Image (cartoon, rainbow, N blue to C red; front, side, top):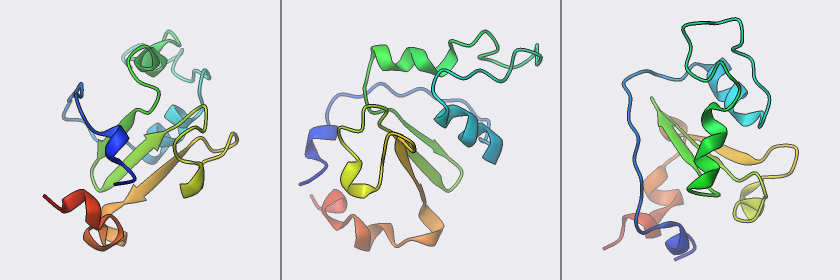
Length: 108
């Protein structure tokens, strides 16, 4: 029930690359580019991921066994530990029992 306002119509974007730990760290630093010298990387012009905030104020990224929820205004995830300094939460599916922790999300 606590997550019902997050669910509904969604826009999914997919690619087959895995995020590295550095990718996760970089995407959490809003507005800070770090790819200017990497001519073959997407996002090297500094706009990249920030454009998703035109569509949602709570984007999420799923890569390998990690899901990252970003809440830059700290409106939705404060109770789960998000703060202005750390505007999101990162969960490793293999280190938590998702069925137990989020049981309401798996009920009909």
